[in-house]
Image 1 (tube, rainbow, N blue to C red):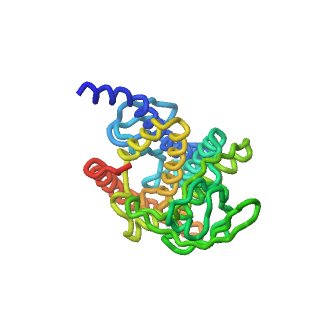
Image 2 (image 1 turned 60 degrees about the horizontal axis):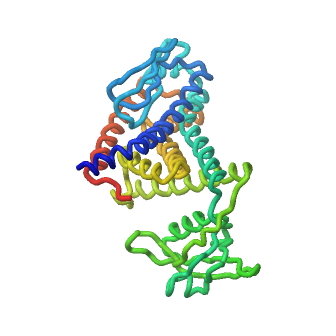
Image 3 (image 1 turned 90 degrees about the horizontal axis):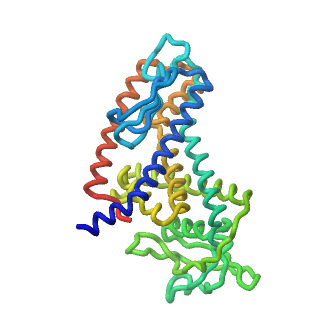
Length: 349
C-alpha cells in the first residue's frame, strides 16, 4: 500500500506535465479561433478551456475566460454562431470568407504548433539515420542480401533520410514487395524484398535493427524536419481515419482523453523531448480530427462555408444553428462512449 502511494506521489510531476501538454493543444486551437474573431470584428462572449460545469472564470471587457471541470476540449462562443443576430459584430453577419478564416484557424494553429514542437525536438535530438546495425537471421532482409552497415536511401523510388521514415514505409506496405536502394561501400545496391507480419505486434517488418547513428541539425534543418514530420504525421492520421470510417480499425486502436493523459504521462517520464514529440503528434491529430466534415466540428462549418462560396447561396442561419446543435449532442454522446471505453478497456501501451 505504502509503495503504491509513493508511486502515485512520484508520478505527480509527470501527471502535471501531461495535463499541461494536453491543455496546450486545446489552448492553441481555441486561440486560433479567438485571434481571427478579433481580426474580423466578431464579438466573443466566452473563451473556455474544458467542458461541463464552470470551475472559475475571469470576466474581461466583453469576454469571459473560463476553466471548466472536464479537460476534454474547449470552445470560443461567438455572437450569432447558433443562429441569426442583429448585432453587426455577429459571426452570422460576416462574409463567408471571414467565417471560413475563423473556423479554419484552430486546425491551422494545431499544425503550426506541431511544426514548432517537431522542430524543437529535431534541434535538441537530431534524428536517426537509416543505417542498418543488425540483420536478423532468416528474415526478409537477410534473404534479400542486406548487410549490417547498409544505408537505405530509397524505397520504391521515394527518398529515405530518417529511420522513422523507413519504419513508416514498412508498416504501410501491407506486406507488398518493396524495391529498396542501399548505399554500401559508396556503391548503390538494389534489393527487392517482401515484408512479413509480426503477429505479436500486428505490424510488418523486414528483419533489421537500427545502428543508432544520429544526425545533428542546425536551425534551418530543424525547421525542415518540423515540416517533414508534420506532413508525415498528417498522412498517417488521414490513413487511420480512412481505416476507421471503413470499419476496419480495431477498438484497441481508439482512445480518448484518459488514454491520452496516460500515454502523455509515460512520455513525460521518458523526458521532455519525448513529451514534446508526443504532443506534436497529438496536435496534428487534433487538427485533422477537427476538419472532419461533421456538424459542430470545424470541418462541418468549413464544408457549409465552401458550399456558400462556390454556389453563392447563403444558408439559413437558424437551420445551421439547429444542425450544429444536433451535431454537438451526437459528438458529446460519442465522447461519453469513448470515455467509458477508456475506463473499461483502456489502450495497451
